[in-house]
Length: 537
Ligand code: NOJ
Image 1 (cartoon, rainbow, N blue to C red):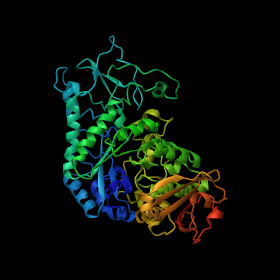
Image 2 (cartoon, rainbow, N blue to C red):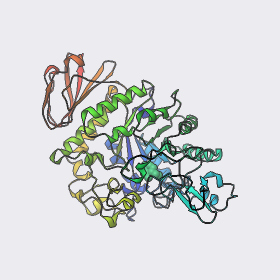
Image 3 (cartoon, rainbow, N blue to C red):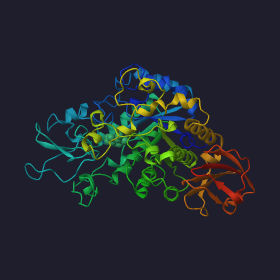
Image 4 (cartoon, protein in one colour):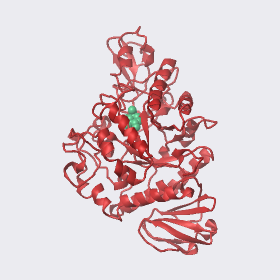
């Protein structure tokens, strides 16, 4: 590790959706003890830190993103003692933990909202967004919610509408009230003081809404939500300021990280959350990268642009899968080439300049597939059935073994296990030196051993055949060339001019070939191959 670079710039993160990771007490729901039981697996993978999706007490309308108490642990997942033990065990192994904080909404059962809705004169009335309609029976404006329907719900008792961008059970907080800011920062501080290493901030760009509550202009779109341009219900400039304030707080505790979900496909806007003087959040997830189709030129364009936007001083981070989207192995699926593509994608993710976030199970090549109507749990899937698969397909239980329930639980899991678990599971891959798991481990080890891969500069090569994404990572004398063939065809070309090196040594190949010293003047990439070379000067 480089002594003076922050730990997160050198780390590989592993995202754990606790509910689906490992069930230690046989109720069909993953829990904190389950994570503790699997710490050897996590350590052996070689990752440095975990991000836990929300584990706070919640009625689980949105599976934890509807928080009912910011300072507790949901009994389904364990106790505060379990949490402290998990944190201690992680730290003992040199691993770090970041929590998930949800600043824009709470659960409708949070005491703050219960108080707020109790009366128009409640001292917490203004903690949420309450409005009258322009006329009886009319909504305050045309805003729609991301999960479907109007974003306003009528409260019969107090005769006003409250705003919810997500579910009606997730009222939005009013960030124009300084008490809200204070309460959220205090909640974060509670966990910092307990020793957590940072936060992933949920949809930070949604915290502020237009002060005048203007209606969004209409446009063409597939779903009603997409039939308006969301100019006024999100992405307000004030949201960037919230990141700055959170950063100020984090800076009071040494070595704490903030990584923000800026849910948008506009990197120029998303980059603003780093702050003009690098005083915003430390990292921003790049959704354009995650949304990209499986295409060398597309990835190159996105990464080059992100590099350009962030410059030298802001640190990128990348991910391909998370708990909200179809797993990338399934998005990129191409029959018999599917796993080979997943290997190329892993090589890219783990050799780019920027912190990689892995989503649990991607190292095993776990697939997403549609879930039957009667087994759907995610409100998005339920609302949009049969037009949208919802997010359950990304959240099925981790496939540990070929035993019943994939070794995830002794009971019937809360979501069905993917039926391919007898073929795709950790136990099987642990024994196979050629497995996808072994490839992830090798890449992570390589990244850890080579400062050029963590701290090195990044430059994409221009003179490469179509379908190939190639880049150089350089730090001092350490020079690494990454070659990714996104096609199913062999590619032969010369990289000598751009790489400016006397020779090269093969560090890793996703097809397992072991040619020691490839000729840079006559490179050969196999179909769907990722090749990592160390350049000799
Ligand atoms: C973003 C989270 O990633 C997602 O899972 C959640 O449903 C929404 N925020 C709304 O809370």
